[in-house]
Length: 207
Image 1 (cartoon, rainbow, N blue to C red):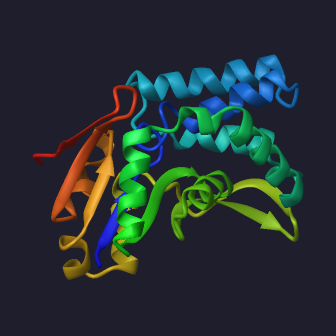
Image 2: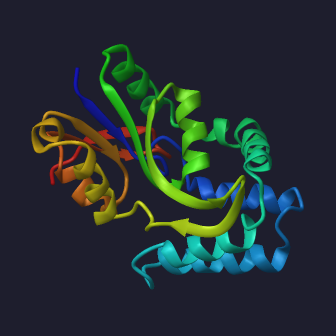
């Protein structure tokens, strides 16, 4: 029994789940075109390397989309999104690894900068019990549009894991991720794998 850590976007999911969600919400009329274009532009700046972190884009998106949204309505929207879009974007070889680790009774953890309600929904569908993800602030049963704490990205991802697991647990574990920003995350474990979800490739990570 060991620790098995999985990233979400580009690893379990082919593509960026939050961009896929944004497109879905735009098609459903939940997000207007001007807002859709602005958020996509901010994410493109990050993907092109003009900004080092997606936090600005994420904060802007959450502020304009989730403010005033009830937890119940969020759950309904995400359930429809998963059934109509996201389940068709799962990377089969990585999902098979998740199931393999679960069958081996490893502690499987989803670690992602994706906002927690979406990350938790994917985790539940795959049988993953523990989730470390970007938290959204709520006042009562309604989202405020703010991020609670920082996003789970880059070094923050590694720090979140260190708060939960000691060095021995991490070094005896394994991790799967796709992005250079996950280097600190991959370097924490004894066995790390780089994933190309679009090609369905899983390769040992050399550090």
